[in-house]
Image 1: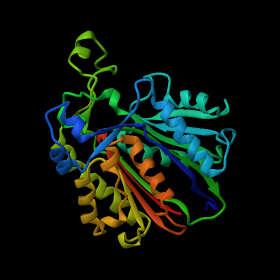
Image 2: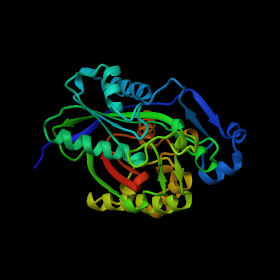
Image 3: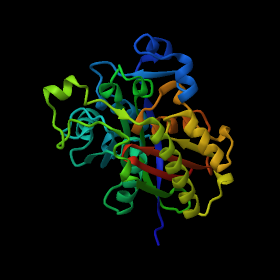
Length: 330
């Protein structure tokens, strides 16, 4: 039986300076502030500058997490970057961040793409690798520059997404009963046609025609995604609670993926937990995909909403359709 646990030692986040509010967006595409807020709960989102890459945002979030943990880049021997919008298709965004952050060249670095569930997947992966004994300190980053893959003429998607980064430092402690209690990961592979970017991969490489048709932008079937998202997040939450023998009323705080306020409200109703136990910042950032949960986590910790002994539930869904949940005791 293991006598150690994997714990989050520090968190950090970053949001670009550029704020795109609903009123400005309504001048770009046929929509309105009331239409967006009533359907999504979003009032504004952040957009990265043209010369601001995913790796740049990830580095800032990582620096803030390292500072809070009281660690140096040399202390990190594992870096996992959850993203679906890396700087380039190849090499990994993690390698750019390793260099910019000044991590040791012996640091294991790789990207993980589970879309909006990416941070939960990456956290579970990091904890498993630390538990193996081969790594000591992990840096887990969720970062997205979704503005680079948005069709600004498609009002069904352009109103939803934003840019940002969140990071967590994960280490080990010689005790059980705290840190990551468990995870539940999965995917509904039949939903790959519900939220996707159709071109740019090996199945449909980039052509002049695909660029002209904006086939490298996010496409989504909103109603179908909404239904499956609620189902996936509810199942993931219930499964991990049952796995860890914890009742919903024992959860101090829920940090859900920030995709849509109505989805969060549905999960609140299904778990019979009041909304004041949920972290909600979708109104300010929109959907930042893999960066969503770590940004919300960092804000919750820095605002004092997470205290020693609390049990926090992370729950997410994303393109694929992936889903995941994690329970953490602080």
